[in-house]
Length: 290
Image (cartoon, rainbow, N blue to C red):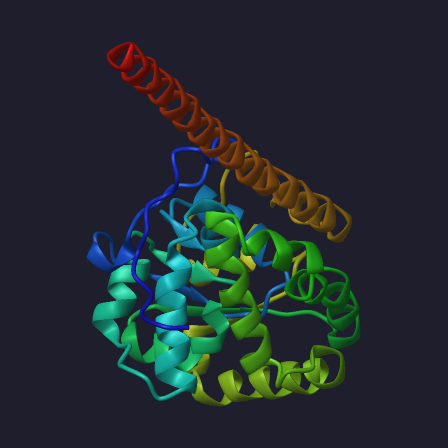
């Protein structure tokens, strides 16, 4: 659903450290320099860390919306509505609101708007992280496809603020980008997506990069020095992905339970106060009758 109003994070969300910035009130503060448009699970989390090491502040990633600032999901839903449902507009102004604090962007859901981002930021360099399609598909089935269909996340999203923003956005992205069936269409979408970008981005502005190539090709393409004494980062392994997501679910359920405890305690206090007041009133009535 698009154009949902921003609501601040509940004060009872004590088990998660999310921020609650309303991006619709933001604007661009740093230039967009890099569009890393490889699909997720091709090393995008490692690339994000590498770009930060190279001084690109900040690099947008799915984690920016899922665990860092969930209200971003509201604007992603606006973008999906504009592109896939014909509702509203989402152009350079809106991209600057959503991504204006970033010099780079990578991972999903940004890849669903690759052409729109290239049009909005024609001066930015384009990086395509890639890998063997079969290993990519197997990895994604175990991670993001699992997360997009995680029944526990769907349940928590009915009650928790952050999950309630993130889960509908993830479900929308997964549905429209992978034709409502990742298992069946994932590989063909992968091939078509990379073929389209290779045909539209000028070769001099495009770097195809595979994890394991190290700093050299990346730094040469970006025209920045190789960090001295720094190994290229490796993050977001498949096994750790599921564990982190389940821990997130538990933390968000903790928020829900704590809010229920606080609200329940408040209601109990009101009930006890009302009971005491009625008792005092009854005592006064009895004394007057006497």
